[in-house]
Amino acid sequence: MTSADDSLTCGDKLRSLGQFIYNHERKEVLGRDGERWGKVAVFYFFFYVGLAGFFCAMLAVFMAVSPKDHPRYYTTSSRMQTRSNPVSPGLGFRPQPYTDNYLIGIDLKDTEINSKWNPQLYTKSLKQYLTVTHSQNRNKTKNNAMSGYQSHEGYSTPFNIDTPGDCTPEKNYGYNDGKPCVLVKMNKIVNWIPEVGRTNEDNKEGKDPCPGPAEGIQINCHGEYPADQDSIGNLTYHSEGDKEGNSNCGTIRISQRFPYRGKSNRLDIYHQPYIWVQFLTPKPNVLINVLCRAYGANIYYDKKQLRGLTRFQIYIKTLSTDKTSL
Image (cartoon, rainbow, N blue to C red; front, side):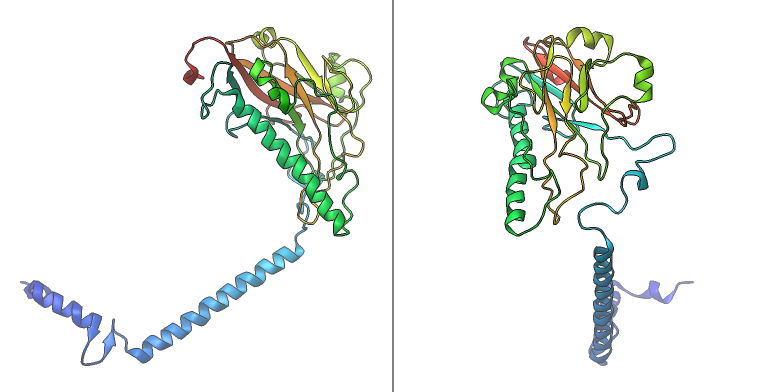
């Protein structure tokens, strides 16, 4: 027994489809005449206009109740504060041409423009970072001052290290000589103020890589593992206010820099403090794991949560080895 559809030829099916698309007798398109299509169009027009208006209204309410210059929840009221882990900043470093790569690898003989091992790649990355975060912020500060806006105390004070040693653009930040300079900074936390000193855990350990009285938050970099400690060589630190380099630690001074209070008129004019650490004699052709740690009375060290520290790797190539294996 066959159905009616099975008895239809291909031509009959095509004619039926054509009649559905446009019915000459009823003057209908896809089963509706002009009046019914008009009603459908009017309905969906007002439906989507109302939906768009509702979305815009909710967005306006959200923007009106949200703070302009800082998150709604920060420091102790945010997820950064837990019972076992108090608020503590991490550290960051530059240059970092590729955000997913923590390797600073240079080939002193590499002159290819697009090479990942060209020292100029890291020099350019440092110049771009300092231009965006400091030079442009100075222009924003001037514009705010001209418009009569009172910026946060200390924000408009330009940050500058007067004696950076070889860590200058004129000397290519030491990369052309195999003595790279790395910029180390503390991550920003709204309304958080660092305290000079040591945590109870640091005092119990009894080992202090930064001897002498602390004038701010001290940062020390060292080889993460014993083999790295043998290969890292001599380091020197350059900090704000220091006339000469320090061989033990760098210092971020607290006055006029903290707390960070967010943006000003949605413009980030904050001059974030940092230190320079220069690796003077890193062992060539060896991958060196570096760990930089901050010391303060309320900066808690946690290797798993990456609190109070940053990591990166250094590789200075002088031999003809395979660079793609790193």
